[in-house]
Amino acid sequence: MSLSPRIIALLLACLISAVTVVFLTFVEGVTNSMLFVVGVSSFAVSFFLVLYAIEFLVYREVNKMYKTIHKLRIRDFTISRKNLVKSNNPFKKLNDEIFVYVAKKQKEIEELKRLELFRREFLADVSHELKTPIFAAQGFIHTLIDGAIDDEKVRDKFLNKAAKSLDGLDALVKDLVALSQLETGEIKMHFEKVDLHHVTHEVFEQLERVAQKRHTVLKLKTDHSGPFWVKADPQRISQVMTNLVENAIKYGNEDGKVLVTLEEAKKHILVSVKDDGPGIPPEHLSRIFERFYRVDKSRSKERGGTGLGLAIVKHILNAHKTRITVESKLEKGTTFSFKLDKIETP
Ligand code: ADP
Image (cartoon, rainbow, N blue to C red; front, side):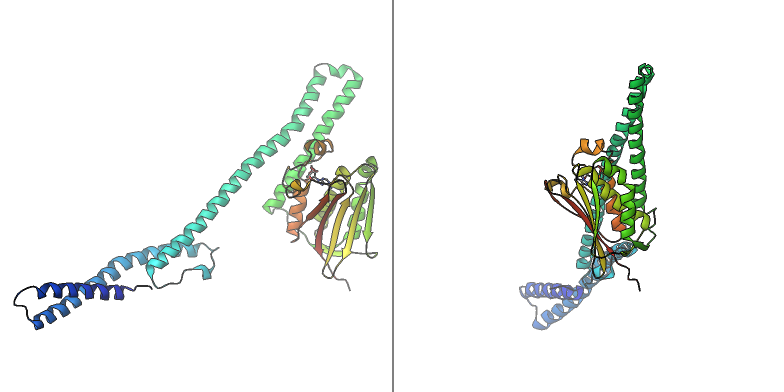
C-alpha cells in the first residue's frame, strides 16, 4: 500500500489525540466535554502540523531531488520515455529513478572498462605484429652491411628475405588502415547493383597464380548461368571474396579444391566458399574473426597472413547488414557462408 502524506498525517493525528485523551482521563476533575474538546483540537493541530512537515519539508525536498535526477535522465537521450518511472509516491519514484540511473551508469562504466582493456590489448598486438617484420628486415640488412654483401649468393638471399619482410609489413599496415577506416565509419559503403558471378570470376583471375603455386583448383558452382545481382559495395564485396578464397587456398591442402557456390533464394543470394583442407578445430571457430587471431601462428605468417583478413570480412559484411558463418570438419574442410540481398531485374 502506498501511504500518501494525508494518510500518514491522519494516522499520526489519531494516535496523538488518542494518547492525549487517554492521559487526560487519569487527571482528576476532567469532564467528558473537556476530553472531547482536547481530543478534537489535538487531532486538528497535529494533523495540520504533520501534514505540513511531510508535505512541505520532506516531500518538497525529495521532489526537488527527484526532479533533478529526472532532468538528468531526460537529457540522456538514449533513455526511452516508457522507462521513466510512474508513481505518485515520491519516495518510491526517487528510489526507482536512482536505481535505474545508477544501473545504467554502471553498465556504461563496465562498457568503458571493456573498451579500455580492448584498446590496450589491441595496441600491444599491433606493436608486436609491427615489430616482427621490422626486426627481421633490420637483421638481414645489418648482416649485409657487416660484410655478407660481398658474397653474391648470400646477398641475393638476404635481400629477398628483407623484401619479403617489408612486403609483409606493407600488407599489415594496409589491412590495419582498412580495418580502422571500417570501424570509424570513415569508409562509406557505396551500394550498387553487383553481379556476384562476375566478381567471383575476377577474384579467381586475380588469385590464379597463388592457386597454381599450391596446385589448387578454383571452381564456381551455380544453380543457373547467372547473372546473380545483389545490392552491395562492389569493391568491398570483392575484398570479402578475395580474403575468403585466398584463405581457402592458403589453409587448404596442396593439390586441393576450392569451391565457390552461388545459390539463389527468394530474397537473397547465398554465397559459400568451401575448401577440402585440414579444417579448424571447434575451440577456435568462434575466435577466428578476432583481430590477429590465428589458429596456427607459424603457418599464417609463413603464408603471408596478417591475421586481419577475417576481421575485415566480418566488418564489411556487417556494413551490408548481413553476417558471416563458418562450418568446419577436421580433415574434411571449412565452409564460410553469407547472404546478400538480391536485386530483381526486369
Ligand atoms: P590470416 O591473415 O592469418 O590468414 P585471417 O583473419 O584471414 O588471418 O584468418 C584467421 C585465421 O583463421 C588464420 O590464421 C587461420 O588459422 C584460420 N583460417 C582462416 N581461413 C581458414 C580456412 N579456410 N581453413 C583453415 N583455417 C582457416
